[in-house]
Each structure stands twice: as structure tokens, then as C-alpha cells.
Image (cartoon, rainbow, N blue to C red):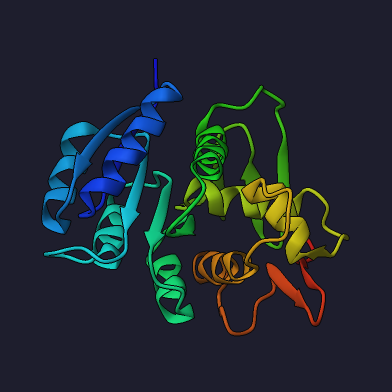
Length: 228
């Protein structure tokens, strides 16, 4: 069954081009051009991934992203014509997993879509349980618990936590995490890592300003905290 992609963009020409590319790769696209309509389309079409423009009539992309994220951990890739760092970070903080600046290479867009969809696919059973700080991570069950209580993470946040917890003594550079979690094989924007670490900390740390679960190694990157 082909993956369903919701394309939210008010640029008709670009949406048409994206639709042609997606259909050529075997995906099933659905389109809308308005922020308010996007939420309706999301609930009705039940997509596997959302391509979401930042600038939209009605609700903007950041508002739409935040609303979707309250309902689902579905992968969201933000599309933006702006190169301003504030807009990019705002989209990621709202819950986007990745972003692309227009104009973009269609092949790169497809590669990023496939990477995010792979992260949603069930993994082979390994019966693996990891510990990081006072958290227990059931890798197969895609579940994180603290004292028996589940912590709700998006698939990408979960993958980031697992990547760190799988090698608790190792320091991961941002570039290493971009390759391991996002699937990038080339130089990319390390803000993706920084913002997602902040999002992850807001959910798993008792005090996100003084983290003990996901710690910073200044000038290098991040590593897992010690098992309690």
C-alpha cells in the first residue's frame, strides 16, 4: 500500500510539481492550500506524512504544525521560502521533524520523505530494553517510561533518545546524530539536532535547564546521562 502524503501549500504550481514527483515515486498525495483546511484534510485523509508550507492563508504553518502535533506523532516536513533562522527554529519548535527551503531538489525531497517514513515502520524484533538516567526504553514497543509511567515522544524524538542511550559512554557530534537519526549523508543544518534535543529534554528531564538525561559536551555534541 502506497504511503499517503498530505501536501499543504498555497503555491499551485509548486504543489502540482510536488504531486507529480510523489505520484511518480508511488506515493498517494492529497492537497490543500489553506491552514484551516489542512487540519480538516489531516483528520479526514489520515496521511502517513505531511509536507507543510510555512506561509499559508488562515492558520500559518506553525499553527497547523502545533495543532497536528497535539494529535499525532506523524512525520512533518516544513516547506519554507524563507531562510530566516527565526522562522526555521519556530517551525521545528512547533513540532516539525525536518524542513526544506524552496526551491528544493525533488530528489532530495523524496529521499527525506522515505527516511522519515522508514522511521515509522515497525523494526525487527530484538527484545531490547535500554536505560538512560531513570528512564526505561522498550525499543520494540517504542515506549519510554519513568517509574512505570509512559512519556509521550514523537517517533523522531524516540529515535534520538535511542541513538544516545544505545551507547551511553559515547559522545555524539551533531553531524553524527544527523546521519544516525535523520539519515543525512552530507553536511546539513545542525539546528535540527539542537532544537530536537531541546524538545526531547522538555519531555524527559525534571529540569530542562539542568539536564541529566541528555547532557551536553560543550563544543562537541551530546551524550546519554548515567543510569541511576
